[in-house]
Structures are given as structure tokens and as C-alpha cells.
Amino acid sequence: MSTEFPRTSALLNAVELANSAPSPGRRSWQWRVSDSALHLHAESNLIGCGAGLHYAQISLAAQGWVTVVTRFPDPLAPNRVATVEILDQREPTTDAVVLATAALTRLAARDGSTRAMSPTLLHTLITIAGRYGVALHSLTDLDVGLDTLLALTTVNPDRRAARLATGEAVAAVLLAAETSGVRAELLGSGRMVWRARALLARAMALGGGTPQAVLRAAH
Image (cartoon, rainbow, N blue to C red; front, side):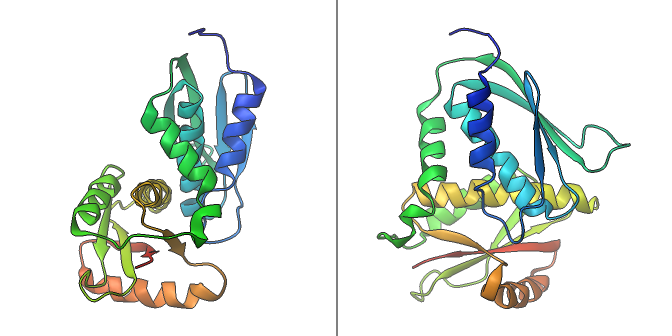
């Protein structure tokens, strides 16, 4: 395929999808577009920002673009969170298209049928979160027939990097669950914020890290 710079529409598609990513609060990040890169800036809500970063990469991959991500590229500009650079264009993989489709239809599919979380899928989600340096713990017994609650924790002493990585892991885990037929969501906004905080407090008992976020998978 051509290696010319992506069209403006491709970059705008990536930004649009990124801004629909799950977030525990107000979407306070901003995207800046150059000829061959997306530049992500944020002062707060780095978990939501990380989810948006993951969605942007998914969108570009589904459009056939190979990218490289540099997180916190400028130590003197802490609000410059990440740069997504375009390297080359290739045929998109089936997996990339599936993930982008899941991201696009995630909210619309919420009212449909859903499968229960299985031990096999839980193990897969733990592995996915681990790729971002994030530990995923189940707070509920899979055999009791209730919604599955999952806590994400980190050990990175860099709080901003840990929260950004948590957001990337949140997006990746939720999409993996969705593509496996399990409806899942991030707790922490609106009337659910009190429950998320209570569950994060419970996650403290797990040890080995700082609680960052809680997910709920419908049974």
C-alpha cells in the first residue's frame, strides 16, 4: 500500500473514536494533529486519557496505519502526555478491524445479550492488563452468579504514568471482554462513583499495588 501521509480524515477518525473511550470522569484531554502524528495533552483524568490513547491506536491500525507511541515525550512539558507517530501503511489485520468495530459499537451493544465471565476469559484479561504494567484482580467469585467486579492496581511509583497505563489497560480489557461476548463497563462516574470508591478501598486489601479503577462485567 502507499506510504504517503494519512489523509486528514483518517486522523480525525482516530480522534473521534478516542473521544468516545470509557472515562471515569470529564474528558479533559486535547488532541493536536500534525502531518504525521497525533499529540495528546492533558492536565487531569489520565485514566480516561489513557483509554483514549488506546482507542486512537485502534482506529489507526484498523485504517491500515502502523504507529509508534511515545509516552510523556518531554520531561519539561508534563501535560504533553503522548505522541502517536505514523510509520507506514499496510493492510489492516482482522484483529485490528474487529477491535475498532467493537469500540464503535460498544455503547450501542450494551442492551444486547451477554455471556458470563469465565475463568479462561478472566485469565486472558489478566494477561492483557499485565502488558501495560497493570495488575487485574477479581473481587467476586465467578461461581456465584453475580456481576464480576475487577480491580486494576499498579506498582509504578510515577503516579501519572501509572494512571495513563491504567487507562490503556481499561480500554484493552473492556474491548477484549466485549469481543468475547461479555458486556463490561468502567465504574467511577455519575451515581456509580460511590460504589467504585468503596470497591477500590476493598482492593487495598489485595496488597501489592495502588488501586486505580474498577470494572464491572454483567453476568
